[in-house]
Length: 125
Image 1 (cartoon, rainbow, N blue to C red):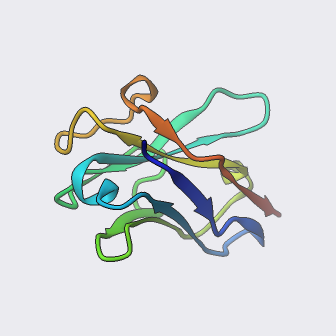
Image 2 (spheres, helix red, strand yellow):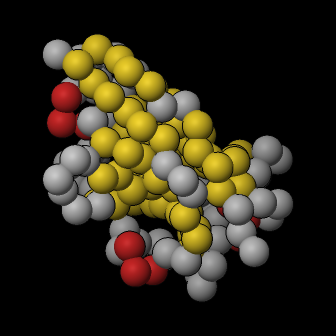
């Protein structure tokens, strides 16, 4: 069973940065597709970034250029660097693992089998 634990969220002002972390079970990030999703109040959850076991990223158009997904195999940890935060980035952020594949990773929620509990990001103007 895959376990995922997010951390790093918080309250920041517009223009600030945050780095979210997702600690995963051993071998998870080096084997499977990993993704970051977010859900803002009153909105559906959306995918923002995914990364293959080889480290190839994919981003939603809305965040490209400001979000950077990465992984550290030695630490079994997935990261999401978020720069130039704005109030529209306020959401609960979740990491997830797609244990059916390690390459050609997408941002479809239905592809992902295991989810963390989420970490809250709040951006004030």
